[in-house]
Image (cartoon, rainbow, N blue to C red; front, side, top):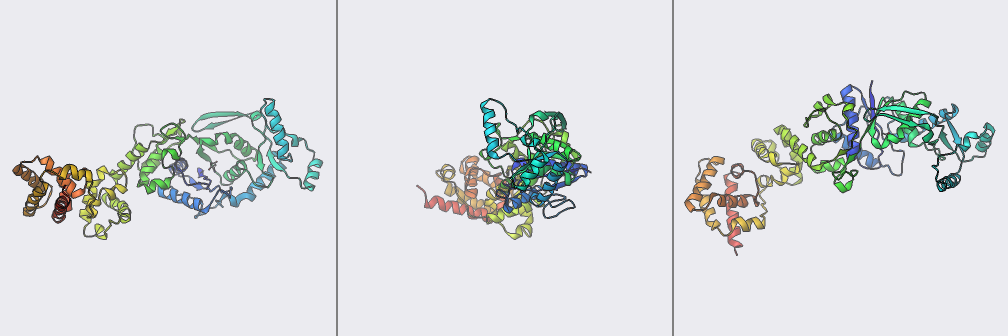
Length: 487
Ligand code: GLU
């Protein structure tokens, strides 16, 4: 049974890199019928907070990354907060000491500092010199009786160790280059290396999928697994995410928090698709994937060893593609909160005016990059407060005798049997011909009168969907604007 875990430290929000690591773990678990464990590594109590935990859980949920064991749902191998497992970590340290894989070290920070500085001055690399390895049982007993502060250090064995990283291939390391690292600090707090291995062993993790920044920890952790007599899991280290300038992704590049993307109107399925392809490839040129299709196609072997570039334009493209693929009713439900926030929502959009509402959304859809665009670009349909762009008014409304043309147009619209794209287009073009103005001049002017702007979806679709009464009211308002503010 494959068991993977996502193990965030709640010292910040869920950032894009963490979300992608979670996603790869989740995909692998779902692909293989395995178990996805969520473990919160909150041992740094000063920097961790419940708020951050809440944010991480919310971000994972938004992306649809449901966990099989973890916070709020529990599981057989909990607790799933690392801070509640410290005694288990200490017990592992005690076992390692008892079996001579680890030892007490009483060297003071000052002593170590002096030695390190001396070594550096002599141009030598400093590693702990194992002074305390030479202590006899009596020495140790005496120090323990005296309550001398001590740490627990792992005794790094000699020799070369290899592992096959599922992303990077064979990696080897020489024990001679690894210091006898600390497992328990002098205040009895476990270190990251100890906690993570203890928890991964007890939670029966079979595959560790995590960021590249942990590669240098892996040798130490493998040695710990071996010393503890535990099976060593497989490792897959996922490359970093870089900004378009090839520097490590940071706030300089824009939003890095998943929640921020939700707030900006990205669809979770678009973010999911985008993140999955950030460093993973299906082996062909396919780009648009549903969640299910990704589960079907995913393999750890498809993760590239090279760093991935976060391209915000590509994310916009994915968002647009997924917006285009939403079923009309689904789109309506997703747009609703955005219209509510903008004060443009009416319940009958999902009731009596549903057909009209869906038609408007279809008209807006091809231009929408984010959900908020349905509110900003749809405001001309969902509200009547038109904000005129002064430059557009100057350019297209003034100076063509437009007030008179509008009066004639209003009469033509009033006389139409049906008010649809074809009939309104015929009316506008007929009037242009009769009045001797170019149709384009009239079309631009009507667009500004109805929308306040120079850009909109196709004008005759706009006319038809606004309906005769609202169109005539807006033409009248534009006429008033021209008369009252004419210069
Ligand atoms: N808590 C660690 C981190 O957030 C992850 C540890 C691991 O995956 O081994 O970087």
